[in-house]
Image 1 (cartoon, rainbow, N blue to C red):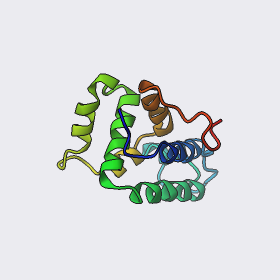
Image 2 (cartoon, rainbow, N blue to C red):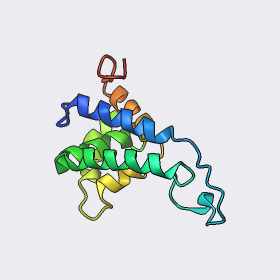
Image 3 (tube, rainbow, N blue to C red):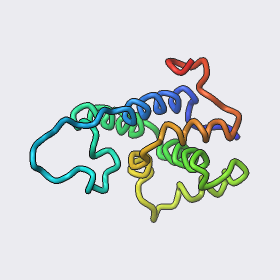
Image 4 (tube, rainbow, N blue to C red):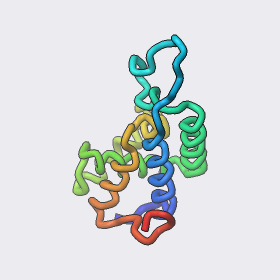
Length: 135
């Protein structure tokens, strides 16, 4: 399998997703709605820092071509076990379905995106070892 998306770009996305996943719980003590009642898996996180990282991830994905974002979504699905490596073509076809939710939105809604992408890369004997901060 040859990726359209540079491995370095996927690894940078993994780094940012790990940062988003590592956000600290908010110390907000006001009487607003309980964030654990929200549909947003990151609602209990510190809003300001989380928003900056989420915006950076969105910008990174927005800078990619549509086919590259779809490829990253398919890779995340392989990593999460929705598809296995032998079903790569089917995963790509599903990611390209025009009737589905936006691939960017689907990726941003994955609470363990970094782990899914790591596992997806591993399914194809790829890794971020030696690239950037993932040594």
